[in-house]
Length: 315
Ligand code: ADP
Image (cartoon, rainbow, N blue to C red; front, side):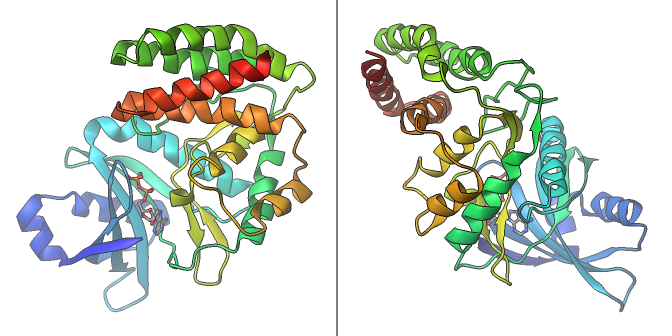
């Protein structure tokens, strides 16, 4: 977490018309307590939204409260409602610490999401505890893959129409959809041709593997987890859906891995199938294609080489 600046409430209102009055009122409505904002600190480290730690009092001179607030343009409301829903669903599992969401809405032409503020430490989470707790969350399952709404890993969004089989979900709504976007973005003929071959053939990776639809974080790279001041792991900024737990596990490995005893601790709680090392490439291909669709550049080459690897595995 990077604290960028501290500003007084009066100054911010005059300077930039931030929606703090309405946000204060909504905190009062949702908690049932008076709340007056004293200050807000801009918090860096996020990718899409403005983020603030706001501090205030329940009534003047009484108990100090802090909240974590994300702001975006008014058309970001659906994104925040989806995040609100996902955070609540993860928090309800009691598997791992997640900021409790309070409310989301529109104020002064800005969309906002308010949640519990958690003091995150620079030493982060203990890998062993993180592995154990992160593995407990996907034990919560549903009958269908997908989610009740679309959510966001950057933009364009992951699409989540619920379907019965993991394979169909990945063929249509994960790889198929990202390949379509990549074609519009100019990913090149080879990427398209090989990608389509892969989509037709990767069912072989699921012949003896029928995963359950587990509750997933959906965007679990190292930047979306940390530790609280008592050392408990905390995860945040999800793009929740129900899917194969291996997809969340694979993403933890995408940018260098979580280290320590994370993976052995995870496997003790949620045993990992022997076919994971190959499916991991498939699951992470989705994120690389999504990166290409967001940022362009060399991600197309990376995606193509992952597809080559998978096609070689498929023989
Ligand atoms: P974005 O949606 O823009 O990616 P994040 O949700 O990642 O924003 O939040 C930005 C940063 O704020 C995170 O990297 C983390 O350091 C910090 N953070 C996120 N949630 C909380 C929280 N509930 N309490 C305190 N700090 C938080």
